[in-house]
Image 1 (cartoon, rainbow, N blue to C red):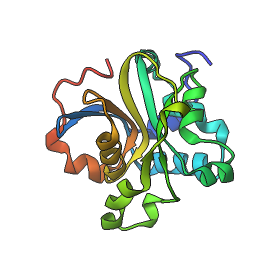
Image 2 (cartoon, one colour):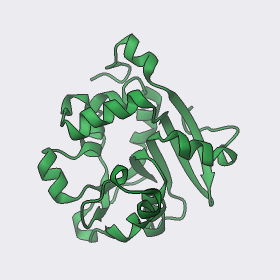
Image 3 (cartoon, rainbow, N blue to C red):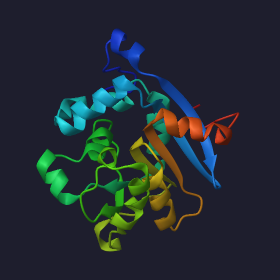
Image 4 (spheres, helix red, strand yellow):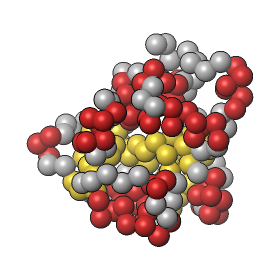
Length: 198
């Protein structure tokens, strides 16, 4: 697939709410590509739960500048619970990156199944107890700035846990889509001149 290719038809592209904003939270930069609106929720559900792997390229489709930036980063992502990956037959973040010839280290993994949408906000904050570091022998070291990749940001609990486990104090995060409630809560943390997406 070429960098400038767009997998979405013009009508579908209109329904995607591109944000491209950066937030500074407790000294860490969180870059958000899209708003997790109803259409984006449907796309992620079809991709992850209905196992429509053909949708993998569309989450970075039309984002040639961002893809070029990602090529200079050391991407790190949370590995899904192994049984969930077996059930789906693929790892969602791996396939999104693979569609654009990108790779990610997997320095963390879930120790059991935990679906954010099935838990109340208080329980979601406990997700950090379900994330563990993967032994160094199972991951590669790549050069570049460390960028934590997450697909959907709802409460921020998973991202908080990953930052707390990350030894690199300069690490930043890229979130494919953030829930409107999270965006509203962190409106004051929005950076006035975001440069990440330029």
